[in-house]
Amino acid sequence: MRTTPMAPQCGVEISGVRLATCNDAEMQAIKQAIYERGVAVFRDQEFTPEQHIDFAHRWGGIDINNYFPLQDEYPEIAIVRKAADQQTNIGGAWHTDHSYDQIPAMGSILVARLLPPEGGDTLFAHMGAAYDNLPDELKAEIEGLEAFHTADHVYKADGLYAQTDMGRDLRGQDMKTGAVHPVVIRHPVTGRKLLYVNSAFTIHFVGQTREESLPLLRRLFDAAVGEDNQCRVEWRPGTVAIWDNRTTWHNALNDYQGHAREMHRITLSGEALAA
Ligand SMILES: O=C(O)CCC(=O)C(=O)O
Ligand SMILES: [Fe+2]
Image (cartoon, rainbow, N blue to C red; front, side, top):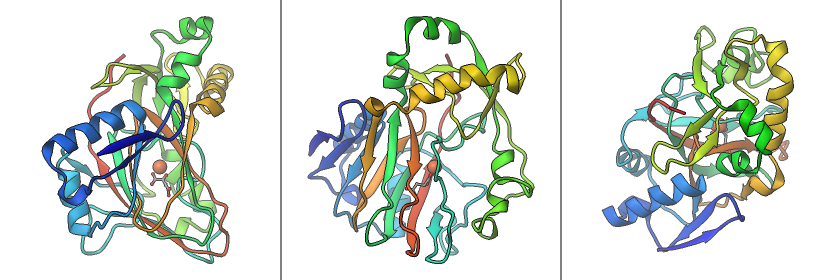
């Protein structure tokens, strides 16, 4: 097994391993690489739906996404699909998945099933690098703060997606979500400090209104997606990417209008987060 960094601070490409049949030592090394680098890319994988599910179980539990369509035969697999005639994609702005859950999903295993001829890359940004790069006075300002996260403005009947042509495909418009997390968490395995607010789901700091929170939130959001923190996943047939939601944000580029794209996602259960 060989690991090659994708960018200085974020991402790793792992070759010489077949995910469907990897041994326990390889599995351990893969997990560690993802916890540290945030996202790992594997090429030329053969991954049936059953193998995708079996591999996910080697991480622990599977979270069923409340909103995306599920595969009929395998409800563990969520379908991240944009049809050729749809304008809006899923995940087309910087975010981290499920931060609106009190026990947010650890990460996801995303398998490319149908790709546009060009485009459709996914950007990732490393929240450990983002935290490290903050000026000292900003680090001091956010020390001990907590923030409120929800997905209601995104997925509810009057939310962002409902006003687009993706609305018809999504479920869970009557769900209500909300969670409070520290603004700076420690990665549950590596112990590294990570910035844990995101521009999609973080609404305000605890004890402050949205208006009071916005100036500082905006400074943190800008710092999070600094070019130095990023890497770019270019999908090819057979590509599988696995990411850690605590360590990273991601942004699915929507630059392939007129073409279909379909990815299969299994969401891995996580654990409560602490400062
Ligand atoms: O389609 C992608 O590349 C990622 C979409 C997304 O945000 C997700 O699956 O969580
Ligand atoms: Fe996402």
